[in-house]
Image (cartoon, rainbow, N blue to C red; front, top):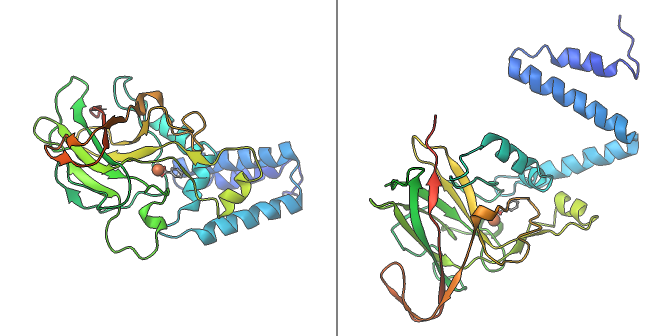
Amino acid sequence: MHLVTEDNITDLAVARWATARDARTAEVMTALVRHLHDFAREVRLTEAEWMAGIRWLTRTGQISDEKREEFILTSDVLGLSMLVVQMNHRLDPAATPATVLGPFHIEGSPELDFGADMSDGLPGTPFYLHGTVRDLEGNPVAGAVLDVWQADTEGAYESQVPDIDEARLRAKYATREDGSYCVRTIAPLGYTIPMDGPVGDLISQTEISHFRPAHIHFLINVPGFEPLITHLFQEGADYLDSDVVFGTKQELVVAFEPRRPGATPDGGTSEVPWSEAHYDFVLQRQG
Ligand code: BEZ
Ligand code: FE
């Protein structure tokens, strides 16, 4: 019989988890056990502290549902989401880089035509985002679907607004034969991550800024190409240097140009001042 001591507990636990029938599960679980034990030893974790940690995890689970993803938020503010993105998307430097998905993507957004408005009358400055989707050789990618989502001017995503029947500030736009796309929406603003839950409780105990710079999200999944989850950020926006989820990259910062009333990129006209940004997405072929 193995008597458990402070010195052998880690080896015993690692040996147990090494019995996982799937080799990768065994690798991941034994490493997790080793690192958790090292962590507890390093900080000399007290029982009261570990119970507080368990209560925090419990609350994180309890507040989560299909609309609120507090564990994704946890991973994001710890920098773990962005580390996993970086390790798994080592793309050609000329390709559009990936960044975090975040907790607010919703499946099944409506398909809109070139230049159709996904803001559906919500208050804000009319904003046109247009450009092309191309491969690394500069060839246009026709029929690429851009799944787009963003927050309103109060910083709220659809899943944070109660009793919504229709898609709000999210849509899918397909590129035309020449690879061009045009999104019509309202200019995004910076916003705070949700601070009314366990993540907010922790952040409030630090000097961490809980804001994200103004941005729009994109998911572009084209057969034969590396899937791309990314954002575009407004040049000069607040919090570009302190994004609470570490998601900002220089290559994803674009100028939002203010325009007077007049002709717009979708071929129409605007009676009010509007703004626009141009961005060419570059996708990398798989393999
Ligand atoms: C977002 O931009 O939607 C987001 C990303 C990570 C955490 C919170 C929000
Ligand atoms: Fe966002």
